[in-house]
Image (cartoon, rainbow, N blue to C red; front, side, top):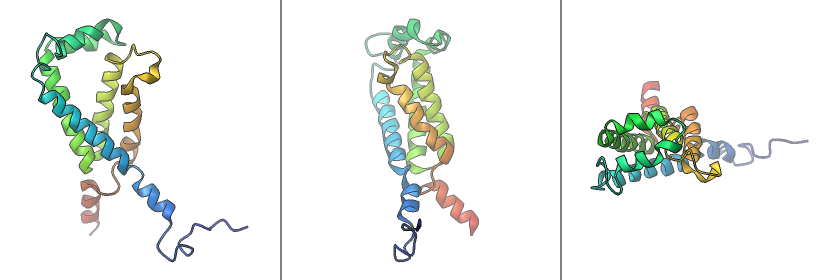
Length: 167
């Protein structure tokens, strides 16, 4: 029985389409997560109320609102010591992660950063969401894991650097 029906000789020497699909499989995820995190950062950076310690729409008000339902209220208390500093750290962290992911620049490090942001938001902001699968931070955390493991193999600064080092 023949098991090589998808091999390169059937494709006319052009290579296995499955291999190509696997190489590019994480590109849509990189684009989605990169654009989403850049958008989230700009959304915060352009919102005049977000960086305030109190008031409607402020990071301080959001943190006080989730403190008692979070998995680790101590994390929220830490953020509440300097709400605007925490807000800027999250916004610039999201921006760095988004750019790194989109460009494939230190992609694994960017993905670890994205996973840590998503983990911290899951443990604080969306922890009390019931049922758990309605909270988006856990899904984002899981979406970062393939990029942590695989990095950005194609269409990336990392791949370009690897190619230059080989030459």
